[in-house]
Image 1 (cartoon, rainbow, N blue to C red):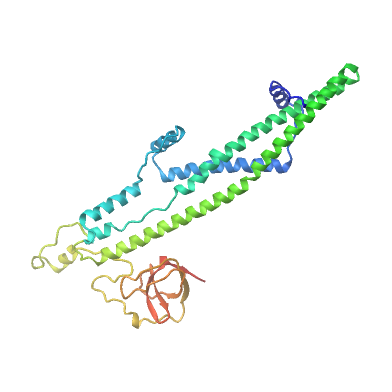
Image 2: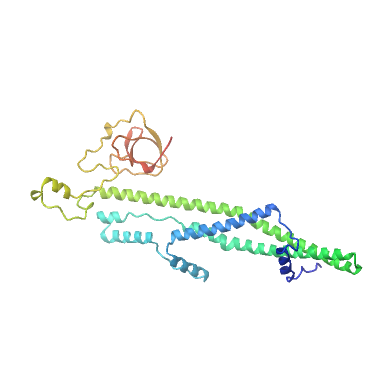
Length: 354
């Protein structure tokens, strides 16, 4: 039966002598050291990304501390509505109470719904609370095994040095060699276990990258949805009579008692909506529009777009169209052509190709 490893009391002595340069230290190979450095870097950056994402999702530090304490106490974290979710809830309730068929209720009902940012945080927490704790435990055990090994090497070296002085040291040499073999075996086994865990960091990187891709995709969809809702809302508000929007001033006095200049200054102003002709101006006659001799480009459609009126061109995601601009056009819009159809299209829905 193999003798037990050196007592743990030898570890502090070996550690202290190494720090003072009075004992030899078994060095790990370069590949192993690189794995350790990569693991430490992964852990540090995962913590930073996790903390900053939590700050982004929950700006209130008191709420974050409360959630942290609930998690440490293994208690269910109370649900807390974010500011954006609260606004969406109020708008939905307003639309329901005011009537979704009314103009104001219909506009209030147009609200985006967020993607799943919490799905991105889960694998980061799982790595720090699971994989990293296991790696840290095995690294500490490997460190102790190395101290055991170096302590055995030191005893064997001392026994061999004294062997020439006294034959009684032969038994001590044999014992030290046996302890060294056991310590070397334990160290090699623990090094292999730790190496396998460290090499598993590569799969952790792949998993985190996949989750980051899903997070960015969900956020892109969410903000694209926000933009579409706001654009639709802007168009809808622009179609209402001018007395509903654009001014909070009292109604203008009768024209009979006001000069033309004063009347023009006090009339409610309707904000211009991208792509819609202001009141009083002639609408763009698309049948008479001809593309310029130069300046047409191909564009790929990023999102589906439903035309608001006959002057606009409906779009389907990923289709290719020809676009160009005309003098005096709103810079947020272009003229788009697909076959024998043409109409105004929003620039933000397009990816211009070279």
